Length: 212
Image (cartoon, rainbow, N blue to C red):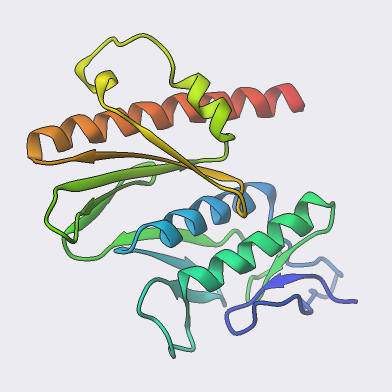
């Protein structure tokens, strides 16, 4: 039986080629996490595109790609990533079609005109209705844990920015988001989401160390 895969043209498990030594092209744990984060962001945020690149694997994930054989819709990609995540969580290895053995694919979030992706995966989008901006980032922490991590005292103006939390039960990723009506509020919203993401990332690392 072949190794389950994420495929550009198929969203179902299939075989993965093995090299001459029998080593499978398996996605490592960090890449699986990055795929979950990216799938959640691209699915939730029209205007954000994901590019996946390897030596032999290149495809794009974004809105408006129907009919493009080298692209996946955000919904389709989220389905594939969710299936792979569940398989991996159950102890089964998962591969990506087109990867060379031991290769780590490059995942790049890109923004359409009027939007931006900042370091760390913080996405800034202009509201299509002309009502300001939306700022968002993603963490693997559950919603309740994320809320507890962000419940600290207000130390700066950015800490007073209201933050929303949305948990994607399929990918098991929590979206951290804020809204701004003008450029002044946008600066604070970006700083608030970046600070929140930093806290959650630190908590993720501590949880990984505790489990090791």
